[in-house]
Image 1 (cartoon, rainbow, N blue to C red):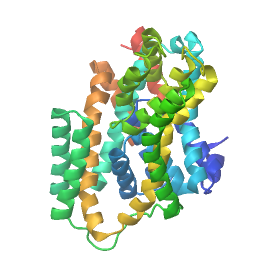
Image 2 (cartoon, rainbow, N blue to C red):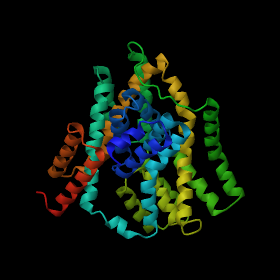
Image 3 (cartoon, rainbow, N blue to C red):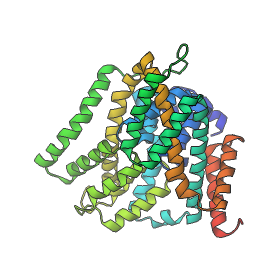
Image 4 (cartoon, rainbow, N blue to C red):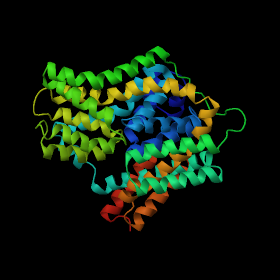
Length: 407
């Protein structure tokens, strides 16, 4: 399919169009949750213009507030805004399916999957995340921090988050940013952001929120009253997806405490899957598919993997459907718009902090790494090279550096 033909399809507001866009992102979005936000920004703000800067930053701010995988929730929100509930499902399937399939296959013992990419190429994929996140920070800062107050707020956010690394610190800074925006910043003139056009009835949204909290309260009861391995898995993975703040990297140790001590998954198997999860594109929450596959008791295999995937992502769907429609209405109010000026500046600061740690610190280990990242950034920012091609080129560059072909 040519890029021109794909553009014709994806210009339509259909679940199929949403699926095709997110499938490509699911195949090429290496680098973890923060890098995913950079890929989304390039695809939906810069290239397709489905959202403007403020609408996108507002969504990121909301999903930083919510527990669960922030990048997946932003993707679900974009699909919801573009094509309603079918679009939300299509966005999740497209973005999640490639890494879920890869990790389930790895769970079946396809060790060649982990060895198919050399350590140098894997390092190259970490390097390209530096370029992707740097591009997103650069572009968002120019639009969301155009004055001294907001630029200072973004810088202070970066300093505080790096000094006190914690998901609670991030949430706290978003609250501070909202207060600063409400007290010190003002929107001049009529709103210029693009409405999200969420096609979800308020009754449906309220029902989703009720179901979210009902799952937290009732699933442990059901697991106790009707003991079975299936119910225990649903309870554990739903709770993991519902209570973790900070995204995919934070959920991994939480899952370890859920599946290793009871003997559901061996420590060696968990560590092997942990490594594989770092090597695949898409959301880290798909690690749940691997765990479900290698369970010592049934359900396991493909069935176990699917059960764990649905359980860990269920809360994300319910929270997005339950909150985004109200968010779209609230963000039109003047007092909220003022607060969001500060919140959006904080979002830039959060991304800048993440650009340094963990993205930069885990990828830029030498001057050659820096040169490779600079090349990737130049291709993205100035040559407007498609991100998927930059991923391939940088992965090859990392492999070449690792094998000594590039000096």
